[in-house]
Length: 316
Image: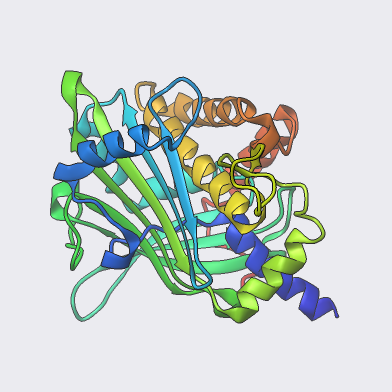
């Protein structure tokens, strides 16, 4: 029974703490030159707007795959954004802002085709947890030459940055993170994050268990009919698997935004600024994103950032 509970927790953490972005045709990826068209299309179609800023959210769910998308117009020059996000180590600074990411470390491995950048990521609960108890995933990092990186993405429209884990726990698969950017007017950048991964029957079963217990009160951002048989009736925030997807799509967009905002500061001041900005941004959506108070969050994250400066202890 203990092993079963641990497996259920693993796949739930995948929903809670991972994001993946697919650049393949089935994911609906948009070439950079078409990001402005896609942005306007979502705005006109009534995609969820996150506050007053031009940041939108859309999600879809099928029995085999879950996808989220955040297109945003941000106040940063496109070359600065591309150069920053094309570095593998930067993504550890981004990922660690999330409550459930307990460890992240970038490395470069040799291969017959050349060096491969990887990210070693440990997932756990939203409170302090030793690394001996976390769940591990290894991501391959790739960035197109236009994004400032050394490798190209087959089938993708550069610039693009991708994190890829082909397999996850309990039959999850093709876990991806991709970011695409395009230059916008007035020195701003159109940035699109896409989140997608596949799931099998075991993963769906485990998530239903979670949603029937610990996750039963969690809601997302999209508004859907309160009663499925009355599409014209009252609306309520989406629940279930889409709610988990949306909550974490937004959390990771906010992490990228917090990282970019802090770049104007001296390096020694950037971590504290990122932590403060990320936490403050999540507090603007308390129903969906509030989990911890500030002191608990910042003390935990300071410790985890220090811990990930060295190789993980306790990993199987």
